[in-house]
Image (tube, rainbow over the protein chains, first blue to last red):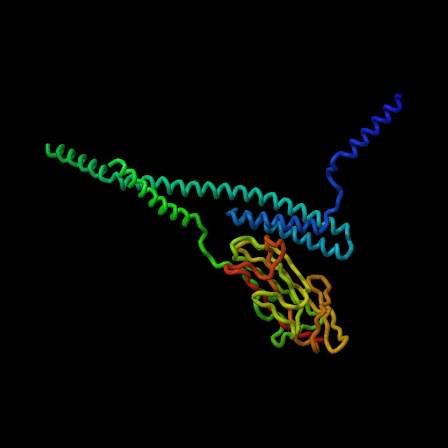
Length: 161
Length: 200
């Protein structure tokens, strides 16, 4: 009975271990995966640029993406020469840089969007406040004229007395 | 009287809102500019001439290394992923047009990211390693940026070869490189051709 319980526990732990999600997959990074990440990083970078991210940051990330492209280029050359291990190594380097660029570009884009929204809110808010003040001034112009005239009369009376 | 005043106020409020919002929109908008990408091939001395390092005919001798620089100037308004496709042509090759590439085989491709308002340079170092004459035509064995290339295009007596440089840009919608670049009125072809003879 004891043996069968141990066997049952062992089998159960084996099933649980087998069903666990595999983290840190050992699948190699091929030039194709490196390229798809470069495309993703570039698209995010272009969106950030369109949304008004700072030019210096875009230039810095572009230079990093060019390094990723150079590694990708090496990977494709090595893959064509059937040097799979070296090709995968360069693909991984390219992938790491592209992932970093994509992440930084996303942050830049989020910041640029919120700044753009704040600028728009400020500009159109100011425009509306100015419109209210201007409309009030135009409608109440006779009241202001009367007020100024009255003040002027009082001042003249005070000076003459 | 109060009702009339309220109506007048609302009319003026709407009018002023339109005027001031237009000013705000103008202030927030980017200044209009013509979108284009400049593309140039520079000789080793940085000039747009004397590509073959001799004053006469564009003759390239076997083993003569030429260090050219391909420059892309991005004035599109946003960062671009550009590809330079190099093709080998001869006298009968149909040259690229505003709408389509040349019909010659491509022998080299370089991809580079170019930020808006910046110039990016790609090196193009090449030499003729050897020539062969299997028939009436002369075929070249080239080395381009350290890679050996054997174009399938030949030329009679080695005369009238041409290197065709085409600019392609990455388009997000199709997820691929497209010929030329997207200008204000559609796609614009951008290419350069340099003729040479193989002088053995």
